[in-house]
Length: 143
Image (cartoon, rainbow, N blue to C red; front, side, top):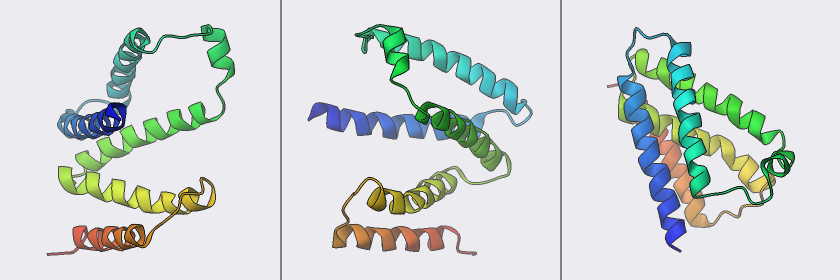
């Protein structure tokens, strides 16, 4: 159970750090240079995680287990990075953009969650979906 709570706390903390640092990335820096440095450092940090999650059956055996999802994840990560750098450079507010994107993405994933992954929705979940939709409307309400 501790991993259950640690994992979500890590995701929340890392997401907050991500949005904060994306917002303060200098507007005059080239996107590609910024992301190149970011990914080089991320590669180094990832190598350090082998201390906590060692390869058990050899790197070649682990690489053979990968599928197209690694390519999809790479494309998604680059899209998220470029997207949020553009979002913040174009003037979006920090809290609004993050909430809007995450709520909209969750709603887009809903059909896949139910149809492909067989997630079940309770009436409370459905109510939450309507609250998300109302939140999206309120976030975009013109003052």
